Image (cartoon, rainbow, N blue to C red):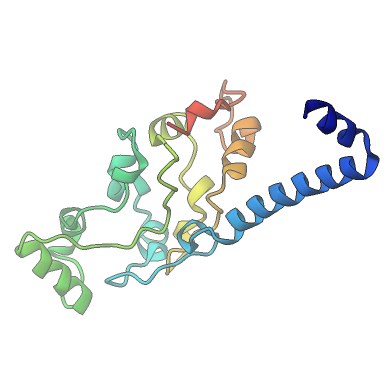
Amino acid sequence: MLEVLKSRLQDPLVRVLLVLGTASIAATVVLVGWFTQPDRFARGYAPKQPIYFSHRLHAGDLSIHCLYCHSGARPSWNSRITGVPPVETCMNCHRVTRTDRPDIQRLTRLYDNDEKLEWNRVHALPDHVYFDHRPHVNAGIVCQTCHGPVQTMDVLARRMSMRMSNCLGCHRAPREALPPGSSIRRGPEECSACHR
């Protein structure tokens, strides 16, 4: 049996068909993975939110720093728990600011009833990806590097695809993302850095 297999592999046509078949299977797997990626991981994703919120107003015009509302990004090891701010954070200002607006009145009702506001995440990673904000924030990488120029957006939309190639590109050449004078030359590239 082994001799028959060896003799068939000697045939150039069989070799070509074997290479083409393997390449076709690999291309199919890659293309299916690419085109079946959920929208929530794609560039330009901008889900409808339960209330209107303008990052242009808050982060841009009012210059509220990202970490004021997204305070979990500095100490958190898990990107899934750093996301949207609780209603209490909004109410730090909106107890007295713009209280006549319908969305603020809805926010106040939620706060008074100790209810959560269920925002739709814009920046989400697949479940098999581990992302720790701490080393990025502590290295001085600005939020806009990955999240885009949120201070210019009335409706928050993802500007960077959440694909592995973007992360690896920055880890291999982080100079543009880092503040001047940083001693960091590369980020980790081993699989276990992001896949656990």
